Image 1 (tube, rainbow, N blue to C red):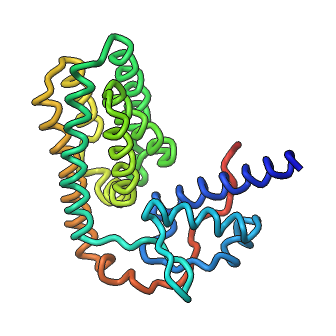
Image 2 (spheres, helix red, strand yellow; image 1 turned 90 degrees about the vertical axis):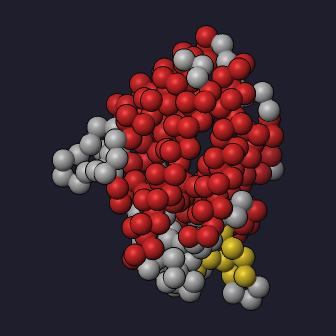
Amino acid sequence: MKLIETSKASLTQATYERLRDEVLSCRLTPGERINAKELADLLEVNVGAVREALSRLTSEDLVVAEPQKGFRVAPISAEDLRDLTAVRIEIESMCLQRAISRGDVTWEAAILSAYHRLSKAHQVSAADSLPNDERNWGYLHSEFHESLVAACDSRWLLRLRAMLFRQNARYRNLSVSLTASDRDLDAEHKALMEAMLARDAGKAVKLMTTHIELTTDAVLRHVERSGLFEGQANQPARYGFSTRRSPA
């Protein structure tokens, strides 16, 4: 019985992580309706695991549960993005300042290491002007930003920051795919690293504010023109993502 329960828990967790990745990357598009049975068949898992995963994503405001209608991917909007941006800047700034005042040599070394790994992932393919491995880049990007605030001593600030960072991931992924050739992201991250290591809180906050606002501006400029914000409310289930399983 214990083995069965462990297997069931592992399947549910794996399904949750897979669906969260698809939502955050926008492969499950904003506003897209989700049929739990069809999705379970597509992912080759049981319906219970999909429903549990969708319930968890609902609690994270990444999926919306509608009475009598089922689930759909949470929509995105210009208003939501502007509000999210303002709150993110406030929380990130507090985390950065506290990290700078409390960080030690180990914290500094972790920032240097995280930046080095991310800078390698900034290599761009001449064919499509996008990072060679978008999934790997996303992980390393998150790791770098987490390293900057790792010395912050407030558990609640870090928890709020993580939640906001995840919410912003969908907008950020849209921005990266649309404007990869318009921004020198490596230079932006390098400047952030240097300001943190120099313990220059004012400069670090200013750079982070600009870094976040550039993403917001890019999404608003490109996505609002496409009509994505307006046309997402009742998108049917399409499941345009690949079903190839990631390595364990």
